[in-house]
Length: 220
Length: 257
Image (cartoon, rainbow over all chains, first blue to last red; front, side):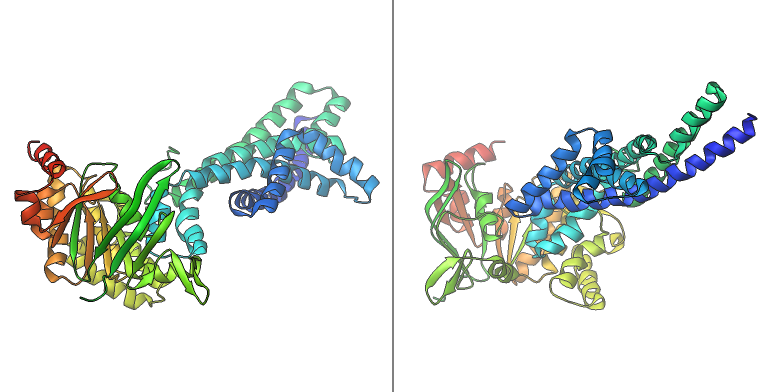
């Protein structure tokens, strides 16, 4: 098969991968913030619920989670199409790691900031939103960038539940044409480009957010 | 004599098994400037932190402006203070911290305007007018748009003072405000406090290691050791003719440095 044709088929797969990332990333962010905050501030029973979610999704394999959502849950009356299952599984999985990022970043804000906020009589909501979170956010960006890249790489798992993503197309093309070297070289480059774009986006974000915090995007 | 503005009555304070205060009594009159001196670990800062509601108490009571700080009056007697009560009581108090604790993500000006706007509901125009006035008072007008990490320690602390004053507290708590500064920057901060002290428009309670400064501005000096006031009196008497042996030993050690 001509090289141009291989590339164009792979690019179609890359487009699917991109869609999964674009949907799973916001889900992961919502889960990370939501459950990270619950873990930190919710009353006990709810806090334990958050801990169960976090530990479960961190402690089991992403592939098995994906299989559960796609193959097993239908037996309990919850059916998803492959795309939804893939997005949900990856979003929940990466989100669980994200909760720890949120927790760590909140803990990294010096105690004096909380005390100054109390002394100035800010309400607990204001303390969180106006004083603590803006500072913690800057510390979250680099590890979130890592997780986003993890997510891109993890999307290749969805090829195992029949989604025609980049990895899936590469494998079927390779089976068909046996042009293994070209195909997997292109795949490698495409995943790498994805990751690089995300890395740049997160670096710019970090720089933007860190004005005044004395960190010129060096991620210290 | 009228009721004291601040009153500690048989206060007990512990950190785990460590007793900081036991049956501790202390009071400050309105408009009074009181310095607290003494070795570290003697409970000086804890006293301020209890007043600023950063530390709770295990027994006894604290009154501020005639109202219990850590308790709330109800028809059935005193109950532990809730969030709302603490919020109300904090209006009386402002605090300047040893390590400044400025908000690093806000400009100097916003550090000062944020609480008046969000907590007291002042308009932006009002809050900025107050900030401008205070920045002038502390000599930081030209730094209004800078961020805390662009300032020297002395400048940061002057902003810290302006930020506390913006809330117009009746009581200003100064917790070792020059301890984290390089020696050459101490005076610019103390000058600000000197000016405030001259006007006597606040009740000031300061924990300090600057003995000359304490002597100069205070109405009363308290020597603290091991959670108790060992000796208190007019600054002249404390610094020139301390009665207690422990006070003498502490001051001698200090002055010989």
